[in-house]
Structures are given as structure tokens and as C-alpha cells.
Image (cartoon, helix red, strand yellow):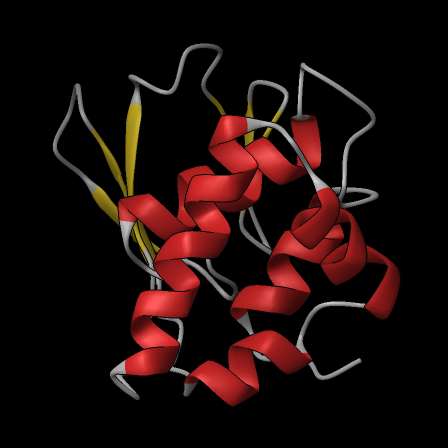
Amino acid sequence: MATIKDNHSGKVFQVSQNPVWIYGVWECGDQRFTDIDQSAYTPTLDYALQTPAQFYGTFKVSEMVAIKDSSDPYVKEFFARFQVFQAGNQLIDPNTVTVQEGLQYLAANPAATPILANQQRIIDICNGVLQ
């Protein structure tokens, strides 16, 4: 079950979808929470673990080609971490800060054209939606 906690009051809200921060607002399916700098609320994510093959399959071919061809050190590190999980056949947890930050970077990519078209792609990847 996904939740989001108000850091000021301590109140925890149950939400219908995993919270995704988009331009100052936590989108949670049935609810939205304004949080300009990501300090007012703390989300608890509830994405299922994915095998490396499942995680790889959530990316569109064009996205994976862009990731592999990128000279951006952050993109290269994101892919290198994936390869470590793949080599060890370890499950990938989309709830981790590393995966979340990596996907956010792929959607924003200040150094070049974003690899992921929008925030919905992050949600789809974390939910294991195959392409």
C-alpha cells in the first residue's frame, strides 16, 4: 500500500497510486499534495521487485538505445548499475532512491534531450509495464 506522510503534522495518507513528484506536486492517483521542494511530504512507495529482464523490457527500444549511446556520466552510471544487477541476476527494486533518482534524471536530463518523454514513463517503468 502506497502512503505519503505530512512531515509537519506527522499524518499519513493512504493513496491509490505510488506518489510521483512532478513539478512541485506529489501525484498520488486519487490525491495531490503540493510540495515545492520535496520537503513537506515523505512518500512510501510500493512498487514490486523486477528481474533485470523485466526492468529492461519496460524501456522502449529508442530509450534503451539512447541510454546505451549516451556520453552523459550519470546516464552511463545508471546503465552500469543495471548491468551489475543483470550480471548477478539480482532483483531490481524500483522503490530505491537510486532507481528513482536515475529515472528522474532520464526524464529531465539537463545535459541533453531527455531520454524518457515524461513522468508517466517513470510510473510505467516502476510498475513493470512492458513495451
